[in-house]
Image (cartoon, rainbow, N blue to C red):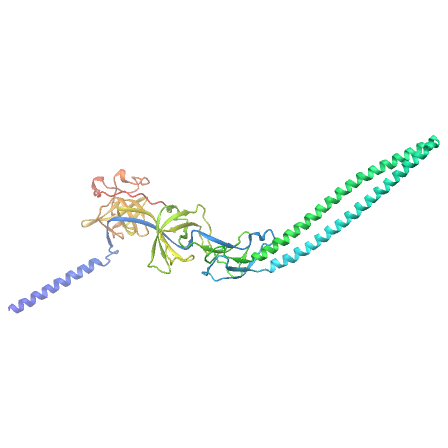
Length: 453
């Protein structure tokens, strides 16, 4: 009998255990309308981050360019014929790239022909001036001899009749005046010849200078490194890197750069929704896509004031530069980075999952467990991250809130906050309220400023 009673006792215990287990499992399963999941109000440090991918670049670098004087030589489009592989370490004076010389060669031939023409025009003008002035000098000499003859004729006419004497005087005066006019004309012709020679000489000098400029540009088409460093290709306006076959111009002559690898920064682009949260001086955590185990501290140093439309994007973005505080030999320009910019931090605040927060008619609330029942409790919120939100008033640390509305959510009354704790935009008449005395006192919590939109 004793053995039978023990067996019945064991069976009873087993039945009770199975019943409790079933009840427990049933409690955890969704009931009618779905049994809500519960979260505990926690207190501790809270932060809000804005994340975006970026690309490393050196804060300081030496630019390697195509000839800057190409525009003066009337050469506006240049093509890179060859360039050393990206990442090549060069010394000062090493050849980095070669620019295609075909356009410059055509320009040199054109300028050479123009120079020959200008030289011929100069020589022709010199010969014309020489002949003109030589003839003018010969005419003056002839007039001087004629004047001498007129003077002798007048001296001989003093023994002649008065009319003959008067005629000799008139001839002498005419010869004198003609000689004076010829000398004045000679001075004018001399100035004209000088002006003509200056004109053709200036054109000749211009063509000579242009030829010398084209020759110097062609020599500079062998692009050399101005200093030692690692070659990093320059980028075009569309973000693509320049390489063999790329076009450069006097307005955008960059071929490559020699970066200072000891000072790096990550260039990222933040969408227009989050850019208001980002400010200069905020800290960031930078990771490398090539080695996610490495993390670097960073600081936001510049935030663009004007948005831009980047390739393959539908919305406007703003450029943000984040300096890398540590130096590392593995950091290279062009590496893809992850940038987590910390836009808000608090040491000790209350917060709940975002799923716990509900709202209607401008009132935010949570479904708060109070013993065996649930009430709809109005709350005042603060900063918000992707997953959690700060609660400044309405709950206390350790309270339990539902992550999904209960089955009877529509029938629950809204427990309002005291007037001084309500958000300014909340109207007292937006929802049915219960007496203030029914509000559960909230544990003291540090107020957190509302995150910027």
